[in-house]
Length: 512
Ligand code: MSP
Image 1 (tube, helix red, strand yellow):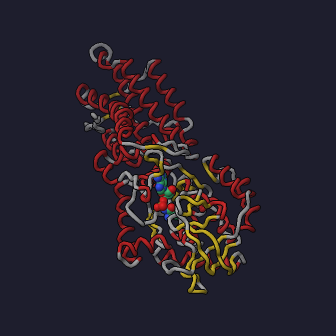
Image 2 (tube, helix red, strand yellow):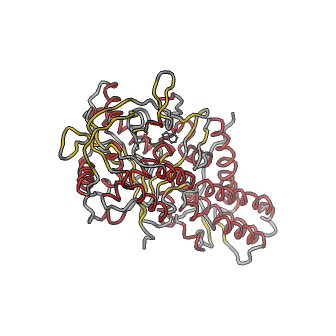
Image 3 (cartoon, protein in one colour):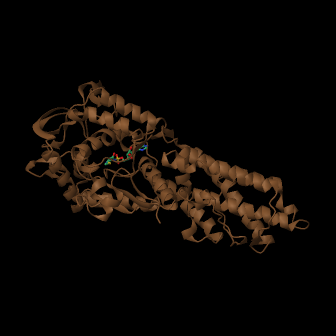
């Protein structure tokens, strides 16, 4: 019996240039939660994809000398390839140029028209093509002769054109009461406060169509208008579930979404516009929006326009995908921004992966393979130190589900790596190699406890470093179907007579 349904999404990426570490970061976070929930026996649907309409993409295509669709076909593939390279376990990859998405956007638009939330008028104000966002007059400053958004730092341009508007102002009170009723709709809490303050300061109606360019989805009853790219893009989360077919299995199982993982720069769209559109269309809003911080490079957001990009593909080729996944998840504190560098990546690989988890596995496996023919029988009487490490591990695993349910990945990793550290210390203190001649029963118990510890740590690290942890679990002869979190409820993983296979080195230490 599955425990429940869990629908998790990444932002769909603008294929307006080569992917960078910020993109990789957003995707890996979502992948870790998806894998954790699968290991916890949930029915998981994990979505990623590309956001292909709007002026930003139209301009990128023009620059590349291609028509927009050919350009998107080419660039969307680059992001799809990246998802494989990042070892994402996504169930679907949606493109907003697909028919299923058009059906879904048209339906949502029609619902908003029908509910009386859309009206025709004229937009006069600032627009940032790079953010695909409208900014208020007080959000724009003059900098070096250019008009810049104080929110994002991107350049804005003055726009005056006929436009359909969404009556966002009418949703201000309803949104505030929605946030109040759903305390964990926005995490971390600091971001929730940011959003609530913004909404309290007053919401203006939102321009939801453009007439000065053509690359996008036309409004159903007026082909002069292109639907605002954010209304188009956000709907991808529904399109992938075959909306408007609300009687279909996918939609019934997975809507409302459990978590939209996003970066803090796109919080307004997900935490304000998106629930307002959905409430207006009488569709349940998602359960959670998790806004992570930015990856910084020398204190600045890493982005194409700033030219400070670390190329994920190059780094993966040089260091390995598990290594990058672990580093990004461990080092960058999830609520806030984090600076990354090759130097701290190497330090992290050495300290946590090579010297801690890798070393633990290697030393236990080599000893058992070299001295016990790969077989360890557990005996009855566990010593006080055996019991102590088992209990300490219980304590450290107590809050793990809770951490993951609240997207507190930093504390999760810290607890797991502490278990590995404690297990290394237990082996150092117990010195099983000294017991081979005189107390083989005690030695066997220590090694058996160590194997159980390694199995637990590997299952817990599995969502973060799937390749290495699966190598260890293979060498422990643990069936892929049994690599789940039942041990958190007291189930043993390793049989009393444990048979193991040889294990190759998991992580190479980096000498710099
Ligand atoms: N297309 C929109 C999302 C639409 S979702 C309905 C978009 N695309 S994006 O390609 O610009 O960004 C995708 C994700 O990458 C966002 O969550 C964004 O926050 C994240 N990152 C982009 N640069 C980043 C960093 N330097 N650091 C961390 N994440 C950042 O926005």
